[in-house]
Length: 396
Figure 1 (cartoon, rainbow, N blue to C red):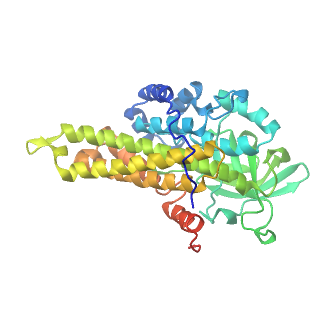
Figure 2 (figure 1 turned 90 degrees about the vertical axis):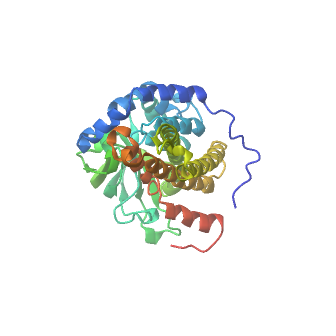
Figure 3 (figure 1 turned 30 degrees about the vertical axis):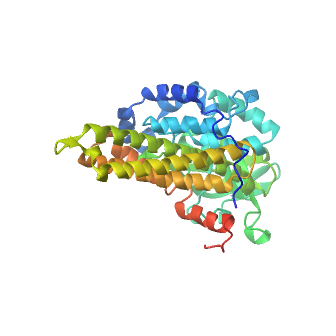
């Protein structure tokens, strides 16, 4: 069962100054900016100006320790940044990976790796935005991935394929999970996987090819092919064969930060719903006076607040270095369901006007749907809770 939160302070610092500053940056990127990006081909749809503004303000380096040029803030600050971005009507999907991939690098990277890369990531000279895990034939069954990394002297040779690797065309570095020991030679399914920090600038065209995938809301995602890519053995993070455990640090951080984004979107929808429900007059009175309009908004808001509390608990546990897998997964699940309820309530409240691009409801509505599928689907979270939290038999 989950741990008691009695010793955790969820609200020690809600970072109001950071929220205000991020919101100010977002004011420079209104709905029209995002709508224009959607009209561009996949290769030109990346919000470069937005990412640059966040980088220059230091927010993408918030979780990097001060000794490496970052702000040295806990994951709660990262959550506040991403939540505010989404609450403001923007999207952090183009840059959020730089925060959650830090978990693996910071906790398991060597001193040399940290000194080499973290200061450049903090300054914006390098981008660590690509997270190469998912494969087309294994999907959510991560332990069965087929990409191989074979040791060859002072190098590893990579062969395989990754899919849904977002931001690969706009990243200098990639956190890559590959199998170094065949699965039939390991005691546990999660053994034999290793994590690498790959310099994509050197790899591209030398055994690594990237193909963009046209996706909903121009998600800047790709498919990556490895054909005898040779990388230095110094790219290995931690010990060979223990990479899956290292990746879990990034995955728990990912759940928490993505949940914060969903919560931010939920607040965006709630604000829009309430404003429109008060202003829109039909049959001589505000539509928000009707329970059929008002109650779905209120119920979705209650769900959103519950998700926020669970996410704060997960973040507090993560910062304290305590086990937080259950809480991080539940927070992401609750946030994904809550934001979808908020999105549906908002779409219904706006009625036909929700279809008009200029209102941005349909854009954010499409964005909200993604949370129920990725990263990690609702069913995989329920599998985790049923088996690992409640102790029931494995269901898949």
